[in-house]
Length: 252
Image 1 (cartoon, rainbow, N blue to C red):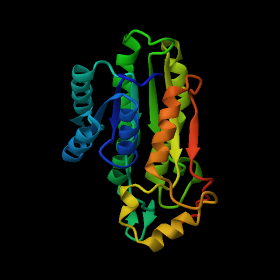
Image 2 (tube, helix red, strand yellow; image 1 turned 180 degrees about the horizontal axis):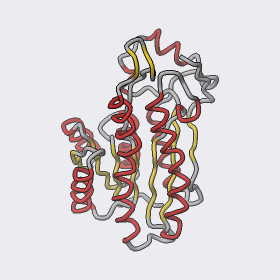
Image 3 (cartoon, rainbow, N blue to C red; image 1 turned 45 degrees about the vertical axis):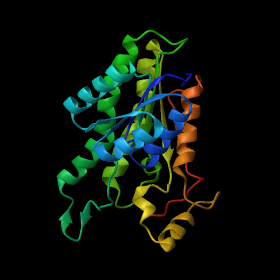
């Protein structure tokens, strides 16, 4: 899909992978709308790239509906949705203090899996109702994780939520195929995002040791580069692409 003048939604675009993707797609001429709960930071990124920022809680049906409507009013119907909003802290299912509180599991699944589904259902409805651009109407991109496939100790909620996105990718690609809407996912490995920016050089070095080649942490710009290629390549559909330097994650 051609990005010039194309309306794009990026959730979680105020920082990390989402911010890098917003910069990349805006540089290619896209009309970028950043949907993020971090309103001030999103505004700063939007000003820098020439886009707009809309405050959005992806876990809320009403908030996501309002945010997408606001972006539509400013830029027109979005033809690309990049789901980058997400998070989660490591915690064992049964730890020293007993079982993990159920609300901790639910919170992560709601943010990563339900939140991405929420924005996708709304944005895809707009895409499906729009006129085709050539042979396609839109592209949806999920951000899953290598954690979906590695099964690390202490990441039950995060793993379950990201595995759900990986499974949803092919299902939605087949469901939306008749409308010309593609669905893809990127599974990043260990990336230098705000979560690791404050980590000591020793911690970063130990993490990089798990990556065979190149032996370093991933850069958000590399995620953005792949996102741009996925959007541009019309034959990519229904696949999860690992972007991880062939990382070997050891149990924690």
